[in-house]
Image: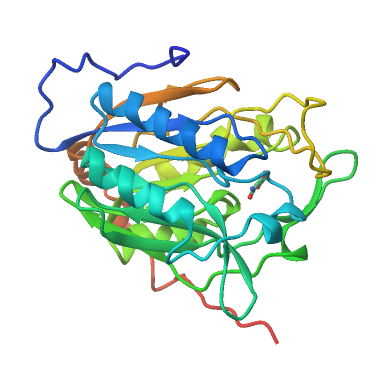
Amino acid sequence: FRTPLRNKSFASITTALSMSTVRVALCQLPVTDDTEKNHQTAATFIENAVEQGAELVVLPEIWNSPYATAAFPEYAQDIDKGPSRRLLQDLATKHKLWLVGGSIPERTADGKIYNTSLVFNPQGELVAKHRKVHLFDIDVPGGITFFESDTLSPGETVSYFSTPWGNMGLGICYDIRFAEYAMLLTQKHDCKVLLYPGAFNMTTGPAHWELLQRARAVDNQCFVLTASPARAVETTESKKPYPHYTAWGHSTAVSPWGEVIATTDESPGIVMADLDLEKVEDMRKSIPIRNQRRTDLYDLLQVKKE
Ligand SMILES: NC(=O)CCC(=O)C(=O)O
């Protein structure tokens, strides 16, 4: 795998980590239209991440299927007993790691399809299930038009899970654009890390991907982690008629200071980073915006649409 670029924090695996530090791996997988092949790729990347000392591994958004609205119904699985869920659970157990399983298309008994992320702990227990709450419906003239709502339904939960290092919040890709969601995770659920498996594109990726991660990190004084699929090169081998989606790549880790601590380009690879969660408390103490909000003037509002 390629050496991550601009990786300032990754130490050799022989270096002992402090109790407050977690070594994370962001797996930028090459995704194909062959689910079995995608399973093998995920297993290989995870094994490689574990060899580098990863304790928490993050996979990208939609890593077992093409990222195309027409593909989701065909590739969707029962999240309770489908093969991709079993694989994730087995890999978390085998490698005794925290596995944030990117996301996969989920089909429910009532025929709905969701973009769903599963998180397993090192015992193989499911500790979080997040269905993307903000569907990626955009139409940028001269750029990208994409409507997840053509085939997907939105989730209804604000999702997080507890780890020995602290609570971690979970969103999927477009969810990162919604500051209130991140704020709820950090203010109400005390999350110290926000995780977003995502697949930005060639229009918004260069402009907003890193900016949004740094914005969420500085707003919330927390770490932000993203994992994207690698940028697929269009080939004539694909037998499926799905429109090609070109992912921006650039899986990234950002510190509570808003600094990019590890990132990469568009190629397949693993981004490693050591996160010292004490940095979150340090940041929150030295710039105490959490206690300085003028909630007498403003607060998180729940505006109901008619
Ligand atoms: N898969 C997604 O949600 C893509 C989001 C995106 O590209 C954006 O600009 O937002």
